[in-house]
Amino acid sequence: MEELNDEDIARRVQGGDIEAFALLAERYEKKITRYAKKFLSQPDDIKDIVQDVFIKAYVNIKSFDAKRKFSPWIYRIAHNEFVNALKKKKAGRISFIDFDVLFPVPVSKEAADGNVERNELRRQLDSCLEKLPVKYREPLVLYYFEEMSYREIAEVMHLPLSTVGIRLQRGKSLLKKIALEKFPETAALAGAGQKI
Amino acid sequence: MENTEQKNSLTDRIVAAAKEGRLKMRPKWHFILKAALWAVGGIVALLTLLYLASLIAFIARKTGVWTTPFFGWHGVMVFLFSIPWVLVLLVLIFIFIVELLVRHYSFGYRMPLLYSGLAILAAVCAGSIIIDRTPLHRILSDCPPGHFEGGPRRIIQFPCALGIYHDAQPGRFGDINDGVIMRVVDSGFLVVNRRQEQLTVTVTPQTKMPFGNVFAVGDVIVIFGPRRGDVIEALGVGPIDDWDRRR
Image (tube, rainbow over the protein chains, first blue to last red):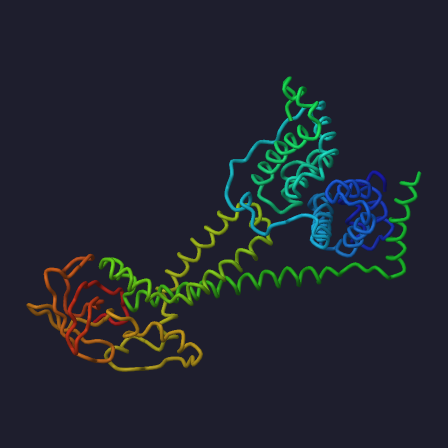
């Protein structure tokens, strides 16, 4: 059972194997909790929200197409729950019409960040996440912490691929600005050629 | 340690609730029905949109309103006042609804809003032109072939459609007249309109004919200009693409 992939396990759950869902929940609980913490940045009711994600996943498991990847499917449920939580708390402004989605933008290729650069970005993201607008925060979290590809992020957020690219690019620039304001000492590092 | 306990408790809680029947999976048919409703909603919205857009095309063609901007600034003003704005507004609302429904599907949200919006607009323009070429609106508007000569001859009764098709009737717009040429005379034409009124159209060197000045008996034309009694002082004359009335 342990060797089965997520899609095979989901197929078993769909067939009525309740125990198999425990395995899926164990595989994803840590990831979804981390995603929630980074995205929502409000630790008080995160446990409840994550629990709701798994309850919804179980209730709607028969809508999952086992020929496709399970991970974007459960992240999509999580995304919806988190967006609803933000709306309830009015913690993040999520506009209906976004110019990034409205107009076509040239697709920026997936950045091939080195390990050191990636770790540095994660560190900065961790310390400045709250200051980033939601629309930039989420793709950055999915890309740098959940290690998703642009295509997977597009599936989770229901956005065009080009929009994911542009949001990551703008998010990184904004992060750089915020990090420099928050930690002026890193300006020296940035000036020495450390790219964000 | 605490993390493991928490993990187990969350998993255990959900599995226990599922086993006790407090948590139930939604059956497959629930999702099939939901998907079917989305699809049906999308199709209905798209068909309504095509109907409304083709109705605008029908009205513009039938009344010759679409030709008025070619007759100068006065014509542009008449055009702006004459196009059925309520229908245009409804078309815009339905484009928005169709756009929302399309973005539910991966082929919709994968492209920028502008592209999907333009794709819908292009499909609606092409669809409305095609539908306008079918007898649909002619039948619904109680204007079958021969109506012009033989008087009203209703094919199908659509009482609710009468209000809508009222827009397609002549005489609604100031300075826009239409008719079939009965005779070409030195000073212009003698035409007969849908009310079987015989009108004299006076053409002067100032009369604009942006689509050509060769007209023959039996042509359906739009005459742009003020009407005094049975005489229309033509500021502009153009053809109406009205195959239903052509003699």
